[in-house]
Image (cartoon, rainbow, N blue to C red; front, top):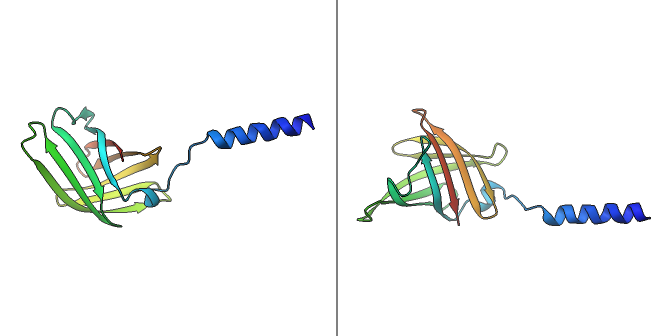
Length: 128
């Protein structure tokens, strides 16, 4: 009896302490403010841009807002995206490039790691 109670207590603690990962398709359609954007291993926020926002507007429409370091204005890129929950990938297409990212959403944080067609590595971490 004691062993059964100990086992049940262990299992309940294990499940209550685990965070629930979201499926990409369930949680992606939001606006995400990047806390880090690495391009080729170099941090872009603070050096190239002051702010970077990903807005997954609908099931396949994406808007990217990039504020320059001097805060004189921002650029907005339009694009599309597709999500594959089985492979945890997001493919983002803009007029300038296509990047396939390995992606996760955990505890309100989106992490995307990918490489563009020219071999440049990207890593984006964003919060909602």
